[in-house]
Every structure is written in structure tokens, then in C-alpha cells.
Image 1 (tube, rainbow, N blue to C red):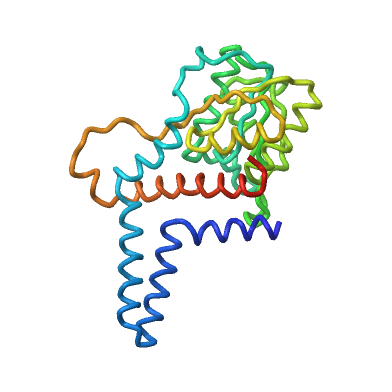
Image 2: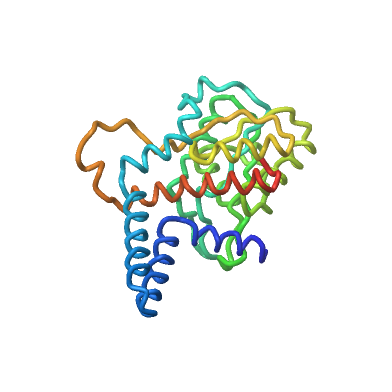
Length: 258
């Protein structure tokens, strides 16, 4: 668990906001030490770095470089598989006593899974998602997804829950165990389009014959306009998600996980 926590912490420091704040602190320290030129230069780099990733045009281009690898297909165009694996990171079960899960920005994953089941594209849905120890007492995300899918008309008999995974690597490893136990040959892999390159590489590295069934496409065609070159908090968040995927893919490749 400590290794996972350290990975999360280092990741936060590497993302635009964390790195910019770190550079600001370094710049202020340099100024306090009388290194005026270096201090001002470091502060300028921090502001420019944060500003660039806050531009909608830059953010969209970065995210499109990941999402554009996959077609945004209707469920009817997907092939039939024995099961679909649905990755967590979409909803939060909330603390004990909450009657309903909280839907996150990636909740399209669960809707996509329901569409796939009702369209007859997969008879089983493998829900992959555990919980993080530092979040306190929570139900595993797989259970929260199961509750939402029940509301969407998917019977409990069609669901297989994988409740141990805490990241994409573990999604792949623990789902692969279930897939082999169930004797399944190939699966549809359901996750956000932005996350799909790293997820697909992880599942294939784990020996799973996975077919991408991406959803939650973020980037939509936009006409050229001046507003796309003004800083925007939403664009910064989008850039951060994309940089997380690039950084995560590089780490997975370096570790031999993808």
C-alpha cells in the first residue's frame, strides 16, 4: 500500500498544478536567498507552465492524441464477446449509510456496460474496482457499479465482481484471473477513451484478448475562436488527466506492465 501511496503522491507533484506550485516555492526560496534572477526565472517558468496546460486548444490537442486512437462507435457496431470488463474510476460508493453511489465524470463507463449487456454483445459483465485504504471506510467500487447496473436493468446473475484492484495494473491482473477461471477467450474492455491506451496495453500484457469498447470521449469538434486561447480551469483539469495517462503509460512500459 505504501508503494501505491508514493506513486500517487509523486504523480500529483508531476502534474501541472503540483509542479507549478513546487516551482513557485522554489522561486520564492531563491528570492529569499538573494538569487533574484534565478528566483524570478523560476516563477516565470511556473506561471507559463501552468498557463500553457490551461489553454483549451492545447488541452484538446493533448487529449485528442489519446482519444483519437479509437473510434467512437455505437454499441451496435461492437463485436460480440463472452464478457465485458468494466474498469473502475467512474463512481464512488460513498461512506456507509449513503443510499446511492456518487457518479463521477467517467460514469459513462457504467452506462456503456449496460448498453453492451442489453444489446446482447456480452452475457457477463466483470466489474473491476476495489477501494483505496486512505479513503476511509468505503464499499469496493465494483459493488457500487453493480448497484447502478441493477438500476439500469442488468440482473445480478450477469455480474462478476472483482473487488481487489486499486489501479489499472491490478484491474488487468485480477480480471485476468477471473477470465481464466471462467474459461473466457475474449472480452470487450470498457473504460474512458482517454484511459483506453494504457488500459488496453495492460490487459494485453496480462494475457487477455481484449477488444476496446471506449466511452466517455471528452474532446468534441470546436470552431476556431479566441476563447480557446484563454486559460480555463476545465482545460487544466483535462490536460492533467491526459498527462496522467502519458506518465502512467511510460511508468507501466518501464516496469514491463504494458
